Image (cartoon, rainbow, N blue to C red):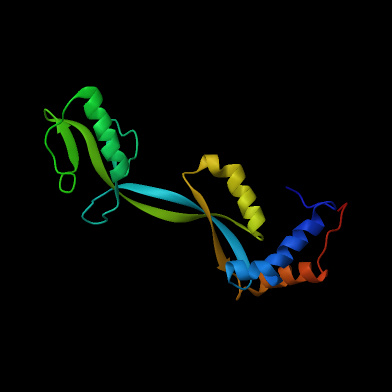
Length: 168
C-alpha cells in the first residue's frame, strides 16, 4: 500500500494513537513496534526431551492432540476393527499385527520474526492478507525505546516536521 493524500491523515492518527494515545495503555510499552511472528513447528523431537507431542497416522497425515486422537482412534476402531493393545501414556505407536497405524511425534513450536509495522492495524492487515501462507501468525509488541533513529522518525511524523510530499 502506498501513502497518499487520502490515507496519510489516517496513518498519522493511528501512529499517534499507538505512541501517545489510548493505544499505549493497550500494549503497555513506549515507542512500540508491531512485530508479526509466524509459528514454526519442529517435529521429530524426542518426547523425553520435550514432552509436547501430537498423534499422526502411518502416512504422516493429520496432527491430533490427545483428545482429538482419542476420537480418531474410536472412529478407526468403528470403521476398521481393533488394534494391538497399547498404553497411550507409555507407548508411542499404535499397531495392528505389527503394522504401525498411528504414532506419537514430539515437537517444539517456535515463534519467528516475519515483518514489522508501525501500527497494530497495519500488522493486523498483513495477517489478514497473508495468513493462508502460514501455520499461524500473531502480533508481538516490542519497544524501540532506545532506538533514537526510529523515535526521531516517529516524532518527526507526529510533529509535522516529516510529512507527505506528493509528486517526487
